Amino acid sequence: MINARIRSFSFSGIEARPVWVEVQISTGLPSFQIVGLPNKTVGEARERVRASFASVGLSLPPKRIVVNLVPADLLKEGSHFDLPIALALLVAMGIIPPEQITEFAALGELSLNSSLHPVAGVLSAAIEAASMTLGLICPHAQGEEALCGGNIPVLAATNLLELVNHFNGAQVLPQPVFSSPETEAHSEKLPDLSDVRGMETGRRALEIAAAGGHSLLFSGPPGAGKSMLAACLPSLLPDLTAQESLEVSRIYSAAGLLQGGRPLRRPPVRDPHHSASQAALTGGGMKAAPGEISLAHHGVLFLDELPEFSRTVLEALRQPLETGRISIARATAHVTYPARFQLVAAMNPCRCGYMGDAEKECRKAPRCAEDYMARLSGPLLDRIDLFVAFNPFTPLDYMVRPAGESSAAVAQRVLAARKRQQVRQDDVKNAEAKPENMSMSADAEATAQKIAARFHFSARGYTRMIRIARTIADLACAENIGPPHIAEAAIYRSRSGS
Image (cartoon, rainbow, N blue to C red):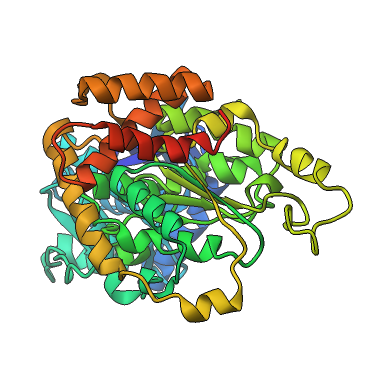
């Protein structure tokens, strides 16, 4: 006989799977067992629950207690099962009326003093609870996060006693409310393009990349300004749409990285070190956690010193760059995460960095440049849209060249170009759009075919040139792609040598 039950969730990637937490208290030798394929963290919940009850003046009955997690063949992981186990026990002990929790699902980690700690996956749990027409009980710090999942009742408590008092009518937990919708840009100052002097080709490429969501590779000697210019890209990007914000926030919620429980409103920027492993970049580990490419979903993944990354890490980027998702297959899990990121990379022309400088280049030139570029495979380079090579930048150049436009001025043009894409392609950026849906004049098409034949572009390279030309046309407020747009796009594609 089941004395009490309440809904909770198990997580697979960003998806929440419903789980029943059932409690039975029966006669027999005093014991407390948790069954239903729990891992060690879930098994330890009995000690946290026992201590939490003691902190509020309660004790478990000296009977046989069995907690069953249904379905029993699904692996249960995480400390978020603490709260539903505790609530089901309180119902079974007659402390909370059973009808009070039938319309709620619950998740949260209990401290030894009965306070509730944040857990990963609250946003996905709220979305699943909304689909089941249930409310959600969660830690107080994540009340706003739960609200993002849908129009559902949310009980966000700071400790277990507040929930006991609420369900018994001694107090009322108010529905959480959204805080002020300040964006991350207001709290963090981003690098501005006005600090960049000269580098006109790089600035233009950065604007095109921001407007169309294109991938970008900067190449040049040390100190040429590659990393500085790339760092300005986030200041050009518009805020996330409501749908994009929800998708990105679900990933960060699953990873336990949603700061303050508030959804992300600015495109995320990830810049892993070149020593990062394949699992760190693509995702994985024992829990198949999201990697850097998924955390950069609808945002920017900046890889500095690109050839210094291991070959396996770089080759792992090829599939998500095309499909916008990454599938992680493990013996205990098969998880798919979204990974539609904008790749921005920087590199030196060779290992020493001074290829072409007679005074500084190493004795292995030009062989060192060939060996260094060989670290990057042709298929990977073919998936990068824009290539820009920088010349050495001297202190005199910095002093005599005037400052360029500010990021705010460029961001206005980027936003206008994005709006044209939104109307024409239903929120699909040019970097992902189908070329056959892009209006192009006959002269432009003939120019594109001649350039593709001249530089031996692959079919993918030709497609990406057309997409870049469409973005250039959008920035110029042109209805159709013309020969000048194709010619400028070819300049950035031809630098790859593809």
